Image (cartoon, rainbow, N blue to C red; front, top):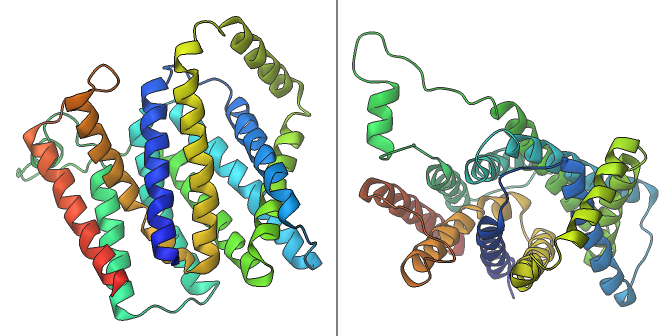
Length: 321
């Protein structure tokens, strides 16, 4: 199977995970370290599952970069969760997801010296524009009223409001990009499974270091205590949660494998298809299962999303040429 097909499947699975998280999302965001602890724990379980299939120790440089890739990934997650404490989850994840491919493209071009055909360059541009368009939230009525409200046509044109979360989202996107670029370097210098295992090991080491701080360790212990107390209350949603985590874990593995096989910039540029999948799933659930998830989708918002999906579709076509 080609890297292109694997990446599409990965983003489809992650879209499912995102929608499930959206249905289970709590209003309060606890200590971000608690979140990254559970993510690292799932990563450790995944390492144990794939460890029997082979583990080799790469050269010192590759090993260090693999560990750094995992550490940087955790740092990116913490910044993203800090942003989640300050703003809407959909807006934050979309902002980070829309910015990351831009950084990846720049880093891949200059650091990995990846070469792109004219079709691929056009595809990257369309995919990034489509990703940003489908990810942006123009508040109440859509793009054009937002432009009228924010800028207008008067002599004194005011610039759009820059949300404070950009100072968390921007470095988070840059760190996610660095994590992907360093992972690609690792895969260029070793086989996939060892490379994947060592990058996840880096994430685990980063979380272990964070747990050395008493406040973080206390927060994790409190989360275990609350989960135990709320066990009966979460029984109904437990299956949905586990399914979502399974989709997210499979998505992470497949995305890394796509990066191993193909261009890291192209794989990340395809992230826009993930938001297209999310939008389609949300529409389907709104009409057939509103008790699970229902969103008020206006005509102008629908036009915005469909336009973005068309741009993404053209980008996908150019990559497939």
